Amino acid sequence: GAGVSQSPRYKVAKRGQDVALRCDPISGHVSLFWYQQALGQGPEFLTYFQNEAQLDKSGLPSDRFFAERPEGSVSTLKIQRTQQEDSAVYLCASSLAQNRPYGYTFGSGTRLTVV
Amino acid sequence: QKEVEQDPGPLSVPEGAIVSLNCTYSNSAFQYFMWYRQYSRKGPELLMYTYSSGNKEDGRFTAQVDKSSKYISLFIRDSQPSDSATYLCAMSGNTGFQKLVFGTGTRLLVSP
Image (cartoon, rainbow over the protein chains, first blue to last red):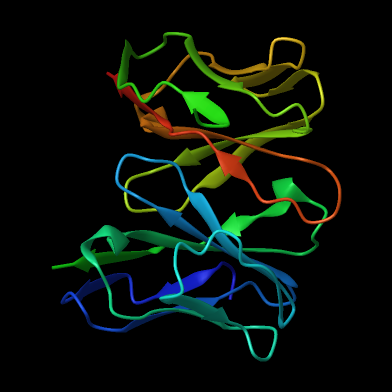
């Protein structure tokens, strides 16, 4: 596709439920990033993939958060046993190369609400 | 204290005004400085980026970086109602993979 596609756009989860968020990056983009954006805040880094390799997961807030990109294209961010503090917009971005921090293209995000 | 500080606003201006948006930062390793625009319920989109210090102009937008003061600015000339959005500054280093570190974002409202 022409841009980064994320699904679902909106997700309401009951506390304790597991959720899976999907990201389809731009075709050919080797770098993929996940960011978390809380209400009224800027995005905060969660994790980074280069192709299928997860090279940095230092931003994942707890071991309830898990991300994968098994074939180097589509990525899934999974959150287990969701908590209210997990409510945020989850943004995915992709980039053609790792050494171009200005080259990110962001998706529109998945808005997760935990009730 | 956050690595990147940005006034959240909102900043309200009349159409045609010159807008000044600013960020300060503490990490001397930052070399790339980006400005993103984010409309409601959309992802951030890159407006401009600057490498190291200096000025960069693109149409109505001018980005300035002063590394000695750890201060960056975005100026918008002849502001339009369509410029109403949240403006995020973001920064990174320049070796290998570098995550973007964002400011809080400044909400701008341009009234007709």
